[in-house]
Length: 128
Image 1 (cartoon, rainbow, N blue to C red):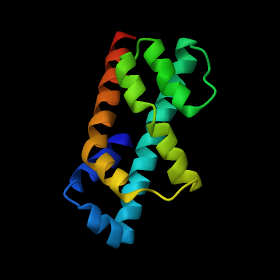
Image 2: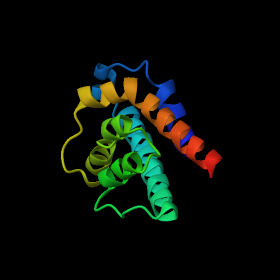
Image 3: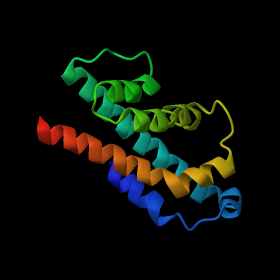
Image 4: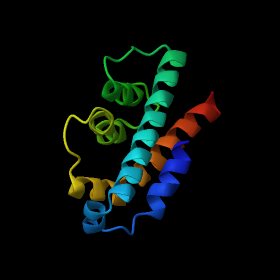
């Protein structure tokens, strides 16, 4: 699921922030694919935490950080990727209006982080 979402995001990296502002359907699709990709990463983190017997985190952000503490993710990557959990909360709960410029920045850079997350998890599973 994460790969399908990141493939969609990557295929739309050409979209400008102005187009995101004007095209509600496209913006909604991009937001939804970010949400699903983030949730897939968080679900994966929670499964690994459970299987490894790591300390159960208090929140989603903590799940990513726990993978960093547990050696599944490099700690500096875990620190950089953990804020995705907060972005997921904004997307799901509508705590705040999604900042179009931030969404555009994430569209340009975000898929690489999901790829890196998947690589580290795959490496962990290969050891397993």
